[in-house]
Length: 254
Ligand code: 48H
Image (cartoon, rainbow, N blue to C red; front, side, top):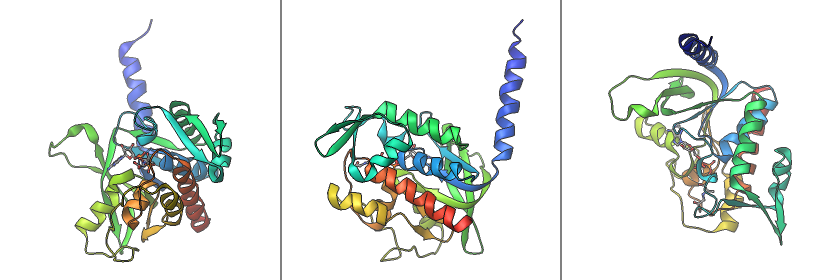
């Protein structure tokens, strides 16, 4: 006989085991878009303990919708090897590679989680922990609480990655709440610029850096913080940025 309450207990026990186990991680990534998922895969594959927090129910960020809801993504030659690492099917069209966005998101997610990364969806990062002038973890809360005055919980991380896309939410909070200077030309958030795909795709990789001790920016958040353009629905830069942030963190932690 199937027992409804036993089913309930299994879910609660298993989730609590995960939550307790991930209260201290090597890397906490905020945002399960393409850059966050890519970073999670390479980090987890190298043996790092990785948690991704995304406030939405569904992961994938801006990749799901392709360009203007035509659910295709375009990737350039430089990033094709990452499509291959994730066994993503694609079609060559002239100098571009075109993949189905739903297939791409699910492949990134499958490989990241299979490599050992844990995704906590419906949980947002609302702040960071700072100790000795270094970001040392995240302050998390259910995203569905809205504006209810409910105190958060906390997670220690040796490194935090802000992969929250255009909003660069974690870095914004870091700057708003603390009298600090970022590793940008002005020391502030420079703000995203209008579209130029060629410049933006190069910049997003270049801008993938430690922005303040203990916290890196990746993906669109990197261009938003460093004052670089947007690129539209070409995703090679997001994949390359995710891979770069993983490599930088692996280098420091090993
Ligand atoms: C938890 C959060 C929080 C928070 C946000 O936007 P994304 O897809 O991010 P990227 O940088 O990996 O990819 C950007 C790409 O999708 C894109 O928008 C492009 C290429 N645009 C070009 C253009 O010209 O427009 O994903 C960010 C994720 C989302 O899933 C959010 O739900 C999540 O981050 N998120 N999760 N706590 N505070 N803020």
